[in-house]
Length: 253
Image 1: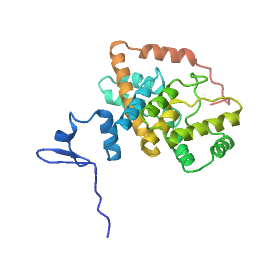
Image 2: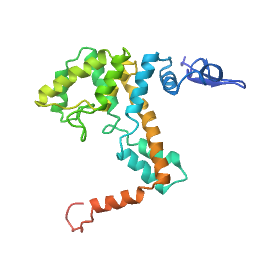
Image 3: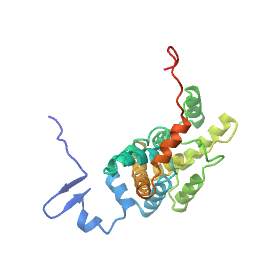
Image 4: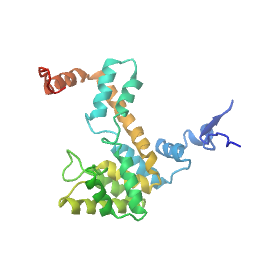
């Protein structure tokens, strides 16, 4: 006998919509804030006020960081198709991957291993042997430290949320510095991974919280593009930065 396929998220009737067992109209609208609703929708339980405050801080921290690849993609697609804001935002969200912002997921998995007893030094050695970047560490601009990281940890500690995973990233950071012989910053995605984990968010869905945050940031870039278009300047800058080189038969493709 096959198990019936069901959903535990939502249903609706003529008079109401029920989300995770609660009336949308009577128990959620006007009663629950957006950050708490995200947590409730994804995880199926209401966050504590402390968890809500920390998740909210994470959403604020990752919403905006200037003309990064995702913002540039959104602006360029919007300028080409201004009738489809959703397409422009979707284009930017596609850039939230394993190199930019989406590293929160990879870092979260490493912190779960350390919290379960794995040796941080062994994890660092694994990545060095594989010549793989360690998710949650390093930043091209914020040197020696990412200013968002201590602030996120401070918010987590102030609300009594910082626990095993914040401790784990501290141990991992010490192992990274020892292996390199120099300091490498814990970047914002590393800090977000640690505090989200201590809020009960599993690694496999952490990137989803990041996407919600970046979506709002990209909408801001669309609105600015509507009133102060930057696409032509970005396009011209790209042409200047990458000039044409005459092709020679038998040369590089």
